[in-house]
Amino acid sequence: MKYARLGKTPFVVSKICFGALPMGPLQSNLSISEGKEVIRTALELGINFIDTAQTYGTYPYISAALKGWNQDVVIATKSYAYTREDMARSLEDARKSLDRDKIDIFELHEQESALTIKGHWEAVEYLLEAKAKGMVGAVGISTHAVDAVRAAANIAEIEVIHPLLNMQGLGILDGTLEEMIEVLRLAASKGKGIYGMKAIGGGNLAGQVKEALIWAFNLDIVHSFAVGMKSEAEVRVNVDWLLEQEPSMEDLKKVLFRKKALHIEEWCLGCGKCAKLCPQQALSIVNKKTVVDEKKCLLCGYCARACRDFCIKVI
Image (cartoon, rainbow, N blue to C red; front, side, top):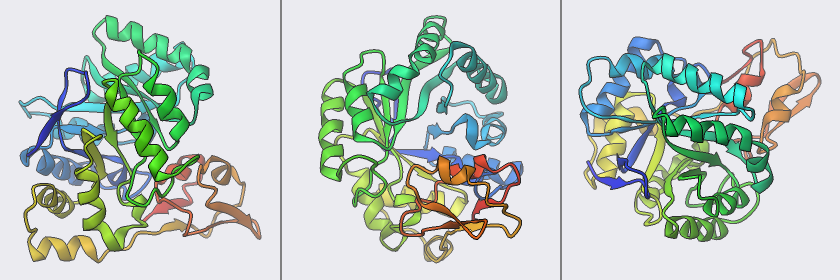
């Protein structure tokens, strides 16, 4: 495995970060035993960095996989909390659910600009106090926006940035790929830890998956790259590509010929809550039912959390 220090943080992490979102209830909804085995495969291949979030519902998988594992694993999680009270609950939920006294990296989820970071500053202050008490290792943000990266680069308290980044710039909310890379270079020069996401554009670059991942792994401004994985074959293939090795044909067949899609169940009532939540404006209501624009959809599954009736799944 290849490793790098995550900016000025104390964490030395694998160049590939295990993205836990796809295995959880927002997407594949694996059983805990199935998910545990996928994560264990990653750990055994040298991956020591796991990315999750409170809304992903994947804490139980991670907790199960880490039971009995005696090597250090860095966990990054995220919360939408913007008050002290809500962030306190989010942190305690993570600590309890993951059975860890300390959460290595805690991020503000989906920040869009300097204004949104400012609006969440009460939550940041709580995380900084928790860090001083040894309950958090580093504070960060996740974002799909150039402006949020630019803002975070200039905020000393934010040590880690988790940006959307892929070779075509798909999903960047407010700029171009070149602009995103430019502000990430600024952030890296200031010692921020940077680990990317959406290398495959939420599935939209599936036809160029090897090229997209190798592009991501070789970026000099990124210390690690979170790749969503839900099968042992995916883990093995991604690690092989990172290490410039040729995956087995058996694993490639399992990975390359699966096309994901956002599925809307027939019982959708068209309430519109999912459409309001989608940052890509990929959802709309037609004839009282949600429909998806596949050209815009990043297959992140975030919209699923807005649906109380579980009508939306990435399958």
